[in-house]
Length: 97
Image 1 (cartoon, rainbow, N blue to C red):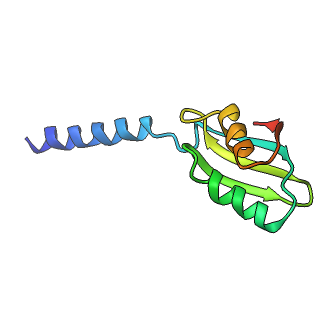
Image 2 (tube, helix red, strand yellow):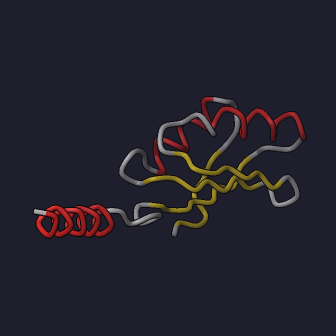
């Protein structure tokens, strides 16, 4: 009986481990934007961080870019661009990985 329970335990760990692939659905997109000041930067970072699937947001004021790491099973580049535009800033994809 102990051998059967041990084998089932090993099997369940193997199944869970094989199904879990961290970062496998993560994509990165960089938008050129019209974000120009620190307040604008904070506004974008604070609001976009709450969009579904967003893992990380970075705004570069000198380059006027917004870089977003997201889960592509939960959102897409078009949805994220719309969210940036809704805040009053431009958003054009310049890089997608």
